[in-house]
Structure formats: structure tokens, C-alpha cells
Image (cartoon, rainbow, N blue to C red; front, side, top):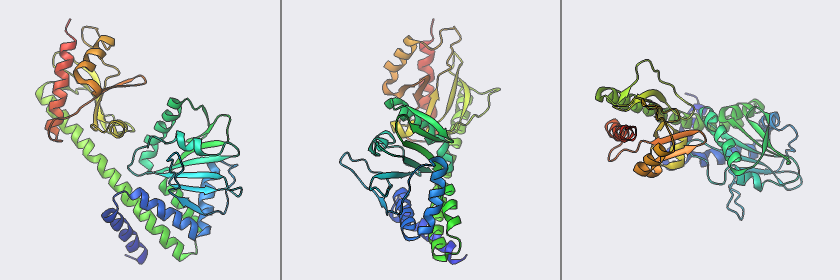
Length: 340
């Protein structure tokens, strides 16, 4: 192992040991490199201008954690030559979106001129976060137009929102640091930290698959779940599979991990997508079924757009047996609701 490899491993290990929120460590490291190795800015500028060609980038210092009076705190910002804030960078590994993101951050950007809010995420989370960011814009009533791959412009303004992954940015910066051994070494440490974080993200997903499969096996054995002819169907927010659910009535569901709802509701990683529920007697999903289920399960029933979700909240432990027991209780409730 050469010195660069050793330093990468050391930074990642120390960041995890002393500072579990690695996003903050990565943000400080990114700003440090951009400020101390001006050539690296060329890589950032090239990437940003692919999404927002007219953004007036400058040579001003990159600032971190610049909070304003409304407590909006972008991870990294850079001002333009006119002194106005022009570029916000928001870095993510595992953390969910805060209440301010992205709408309040976009509101903070100046009304005049071209500006951008860039989100950085592990490659797998890019697919998850981008629809969620757009949903936040939709919910706020902030109109936008697509202007590129994962890039939108807020209508009537020069404000842009886009997302890219960490490695794409670091590769672009590294291309401009060729010939600078110190700069490449510093960037290598950050790259090692990002890889460490992405590996942890990947490992965090694996128990989800194992958990869903174990619960599915228990359900098949107990008779309240049937998967014959149905395959596992992972989605962008987690591993899952289609199943026929219930003892007396086999209703179609998707059972799996929903990391978006887990972050938002902080109750459970496992959810039932009941958008296509159809009871054998033809009753199907309707307002009376929803109301009755809501009365039995309260806030565990969620409706988001056209999708209807039921949280699988175990009592006691977090093992497969506990999740299966919670699912069996839901199956019993649904069978009662479907009575003629």
C-alpha cells in the first residue's frame, strides 16, 4: 500500500471513529481542497457548467456552514464577483433531506442573475433523492422546467437545482490536479472517505434484502403470504417483492424496504404498498376500507399521491419474527375488513 492509500484509509477510519456524521467531514475536506488547490476548481466548474452553462463562477473562497437569519445552512457556498451567493453545494451520504431542502435554499439564492443549488450524493442515492427533491418543489408550488439530465430551472428566475454523484465530481477535480502530487494526495483522502461511506451505504441495504426474504419465508410457512409466480422487484428506495397477502383474501401488495418513508416517518424500514389491493369479493380499496384501517392503525397508514402505504411496525425486537408478527396482525385486520 502506498502513502496515498494509507492516508485515504486513515482519514476514513478516523472520520468514522471520532465523527459519525461523515457528511460534515467530507464537506470540510471538499472546501479545503477547492480553496487550497485552485486547479481543482476547474473540475468543479466544468461539471457545474454542464448543468448550468451561464453560471458566473468566481475565484472567491468557498465557505462552509454559512447560516442565515432563517437558519438555512448550505454545506458549501461560493459568492460571485458581485458578492452575491451564486452556488450552494449540499452533500449527502445517509442523511435525509431537512425541512429547508431544497425549497428554502432556493429561496435564499438571489433573485437576480444565474444561480445553482447542487446536491452531491452516492451514486445509488442519486436515483432516490432526485424524485424526492422534485416532489418537494411540487408540494411547495414552486414551478420548474427540465433543462438537462437531473437539472431543473425555477420558472421566472435564473435559479437552478441539479444533482450529481460524489465520484463524478472527484474524478473531474482529479483531472485538473494532474502533476500536483500534494493535491492528488489530498483528493485521494477524500475519495477514500467517500468510498468508505458508499460501502457502508451498500452494506446498510443488504440486511434489508435479507430481512424481507426471511419475513417472506415466515409468511409463506404460516399461510398468510403467497409468492407463487411473483418475483422480487427492488425499487429505487429499497428491496422488496410482490406478494399475495392475507389468509382468507389474497390481495396484491408490494412488501419491502422504503428508505424514503423510513427517513420521513422514522418508524420502520418495512412497508406495504397497497395501491393495487383488490379483495376477492370485489370490494377493493375504497374510502371505507381506508377509514377502517386508519382507525385500527392510525398514523401507520400513509397516502402519498396515488400510492397507499401501511407501515410494518414490530413490537419489541427488530428481527424477522417481530416484523412477521406485525404483518400477520395487518393480514388479520384486512381479512376482517373484507367481510361481506
